[in-house]
Image (tube, rainbow, N blue to C red; front, side):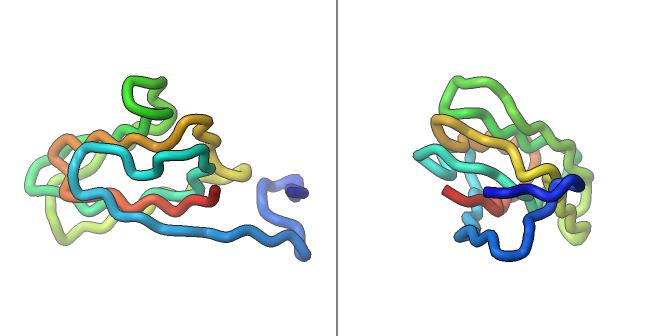
Length: 104
């Protein structure tokens, strides 16, 4: 896939983007993928969303969430996303859910 200098896609490139919402700690995507963004549903208390490369793998994404269930937080990942060679394993701490925008 060709990438523009600013990290965007060049017209003519195509990818199949998928979304999955994880409301408990566990495997969100069980195969290799590229995560392009994370939408967090906050909990009543501040917390974190950590996404590892597979269960027990390296933490490749760590996002702090704020207290307040009505405060949305979307985090786009520029530069073509972050590659997970094993899969995306989500750990939620005081966050109600995380929706991953990804491609395989």
